[in-house]
Amino acid sequence: KGLISSKENLTDPKTFHSDVRQGCPNSVLEGQCPAEFSSNLPQHTCLEVSNGPLTGSRKRPSEGNYEKEKDVCIQLFDLWSEADQVEFVEHLISRMCHYQHGHINSYLKPMLQRDFITALPAQGLDHIAENILSFLDARSLCSAELVCKEWQRVISEGMLWKKLIERMVRTDPLWKGLSERHQWEKYLFKNRTTEVPPNSYYRSLYPKIIQDIETIEANWRCGRHNLQRIQCRSENSKGVYCLQYDDEKIISGLRDNSIKIWDKQTLECLKILTGHTGSVLCLQYDERVIVTGSSDSTVRVWDVNSGEVLNTLIHHNEAVLHLRFCNGLMVTCSKDRSIAVWDMASPTDISLRRVLVGHRAAVNVVDFDDKYIVSASGDRTIKVWSTSTCEFVRTLNGHKRGIACLQYRDRLVVSGSSDNTIRLWDIECGACLRVLEGHEELVRCIRFDNKRIVSGAYDGKIKVWDLQAALDPRAPASTLCLRTLVEHSGRVFRLQFDEFQIISSSHDDTILIWDFLNVSTNGQTEGRSPSRTYTYISR
Image 1 (cartoon, helix red, strand yellow):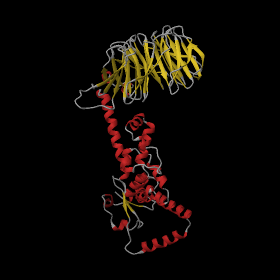
Image 2 (cartoon, one colour):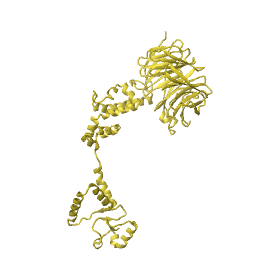
Image 3 (cartoon, helix red, strand yellow):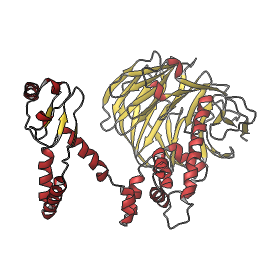
Image 4 (cartoon, helix red, strand yellow):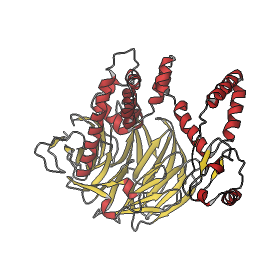
């Protein structure tokens, strides 16, 4: 060990250690510092050199010179400009050692910290403090409330729990659906001038919403549901081929050539649309029109409110098997192996843009967005076309038999086939990401959202799959099917679902509503619920 002066200019550690060892007696190297040796060193900071980190302490003189000199320095320092003061301190720090830098850093850290949430309201800037805290999630907001009374006041007066719930409702369909069904949406998206509950109401509402969400997710996993059944029997009907629903109504297409509109709350038949001379195989509606495709080879456009026929499109040579429309564009496909692309200027002004050919068997289903049109056929292939140019892009191969259904969104295509499997595809590269096995017969209908895939098959079963697990190549195949729902007594033809329910139709002439939100737990077995049935008999 040896002693060095902090004022020595020691640029080379090797030279330093050599010089110290040559100039020090053995007693110094053994950790002792004789008076005759230390008296020759400058009387300022001493650093002890050891195998550990550098440690040091000021050797204060016994007389009061330091205090006098310090006062003189401070007086001179106070006379300088801020720029000169900064420059002087920079020079001073540059002459210090690492230990001193660490000590200064520890001293400065608390001085540089600012409680801006408390400081901003004092400057009349409450809205900025509220805006900063409004970006916190629920867990962080809880922690922020515990910081101090001022933070708690900013959160309370800023109604930040209300803003957090509003943000979730805007961005998450599950939250939006719960707000509508549980009637607390009426307390949201209102300014402070209107009658709104205090922040404490929203603070207590948030955990209740989380509990509702956890219950719904558990119901999906365990198959707990409340079942409602619509019996659609009429003299000639032997199946419900297609359907679509919203919060008020269900519109279904039947084998008896009719379209029936049902009240979703009472399950009563509100209206019957007739005009097709063949089974109604596909339909889609929006706030203005219902568009249907039939085995009579025509596409009809109906007024959704009056039920009046607005337009009839005659193009396909055989049954129209599927159709989709959105943003002024419609795509239909047919048993005649072709795909028709239509421009929809209005319900009465629909013109044929392009006919796409390439499939070698009936085209059973189409879907599209702004980038791609996707079609699937009995020829076992999925074909991808450019929406803007209608040019062919690529073919997805993999299914062993004909493909009956698909859905396309973003990069993902999910398809169901008569080989009894479901395949997940990346549309951009054409790769098959996963094969789902479990159905015992043809997979007739399929839908997916961000969490789940729901499929229906000719085996009469509806299966719920974990989408995120299916996209993870490490997930075992045995974990992918969450639940199998068995209530239909015939082939499942069509289904649609959202965060709260599945609505399905079948060859057994029924429409089933599987409700995972309003589940009674009194005396029920898992996966089964008492049903409410409404039967419609045509006159």
